[in-house]
Amino acid sequence: MPNLTVSPDVDTKRAKTLVQEHVDIGDTVEVRSQERTMDQIMVVTGDVTGFEPGYLELDGQPLDDGSVRYDEIHTVSTIEDEANEA
Image (cartoon, rainbow, N blue to C red; front, side, top):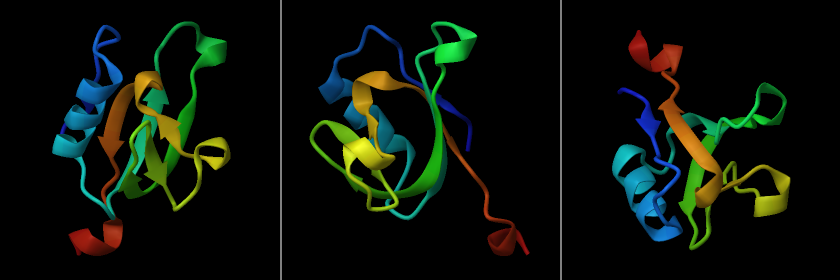
């Protein structure tokens, strides 16, 4: 599946909808933050465990411990599980 790029001008509700249409609970994803400068880019990898009102829940973690706010998402990529490809 191709990467999802979220435009910086969409609101949180629209960003959540776009992410929900692109990934499913249980998918392993890589999430990158808005690309402002190279030293500020956030990259988070984990399993999608929830679509919370303000953030994408990864690995069952709260926002402060590894999940990502929708308004900070620039790209979402699904990581293929090599075990599932065999």
